[in-house]
Image: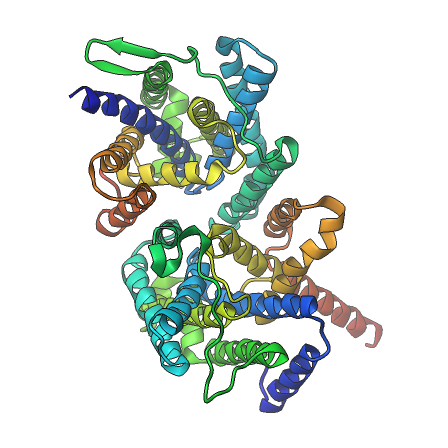
Length: 316
Length: 294
């Protein structure tokens, strides 16, 4: 989206929805917004920058655990804890990205997959700091200046998070840096010849998108008021990848469509096939890669082009 | 001493399983450049094949194991036919089949989960349950069977690559796809055979390991991770590297669990740390790939 008015309008509409929903619907709505946020930043990493990484949910988890540990166990004030948690994500992302971006092709996938699994192992073994397999629970969002953000007001925080992520990525994608990312994705040698440093571009893209995932994780931590290792495992990392590919990688609209579709699909499918909706995810994923590599957004683009072409013919 | 030797036998056996999984990756990666994360799920499918034939239908082991391996050849061939070949023929980037196979990973797992439910299913060992003691060396029958049969598989594969024309054509494709195609090697056929062979080896490993851990629909991902860790340690270029990587992984893992004073849960992170270390320090693995000889 380009205009400030557009963002403002979207913020008002999406926030207004928060006030008419029941508690169960609020929960679904909040998680839908968070999935969209994650899909947007993952799309920048995978679709725009072309890095196959399985670590996005790990940074979501690092953000969530950091904010909870800092505010409850260390009793830091919320604003300071947010800054510190963002820094933790950035440092962790640098530690992963600096060596891992040296690796060609699927080795980055392997390294981030190992990192993601290692994170879950550490969470499970973290004792009282991470709460082990049960995770952390029984905490609340700290007060800021005597105020505690709850109910629909907290949903607005998530709306702002999502639109903020979109705005950052929208600007980034159209900047010199965004073009450099796409150049490195499509042809690193040619990009280097044009004066773009492929490694540095990959590292910066990785750190920015991982930090955005971490920020989303901090917001998530106070949605359920519980964090546990299962949420941040590989299952959800795969699901996120499927969302971006099915929606159409490299496109913001595609990421949103993929996230909405795959998040809501189980609600439609569960009455029909129980818990086996993952089978449908897998099949749709395979079919998308085989027959519609541009994703659903590509389908929409080609339909629009065809209509424009036929309209052009009928009125010569 | 006795303890050490017993641990050695069990580490050798797990190392063989990891080595077989690494070999399954290698058979496909080497000629095609495609890394197939569904290898672990193929091991899981093989394990359930073992459950159906050996436990449910009580087919004798000597007949049941080859049957499972044959079925896996069909699974591998079919997977390649449906999800890899259309993309290769279209000239899609190499990432596309990797992603399609990632989708297949979920499809395989969910099909088995729908068919067999979430409970673990028993798969018998080749020689029944029992302990074999040869002087100081002792271990379960299954451990010795795993070690012996893995050695046979590796010798067979090595012989195939070194001594048969078809095997040489695999190596030729691995070294230079274009030159191999110009020499009249059928790339599509080599790819199909690579996937069939990969599935056979993975399924074989699945049946073997299921005697120790039972067949379970979630067993695939750990197998996949162990397999590619072994592959990265040994190097993607050489058949011997797969076995070497598997053994190094298993020995490190088991000796740390046994002798290092860290909790058992943290020990699960050992292979992951090993994988990350190797990726950072020596991403080409211990053994170097063969290059074209002038």
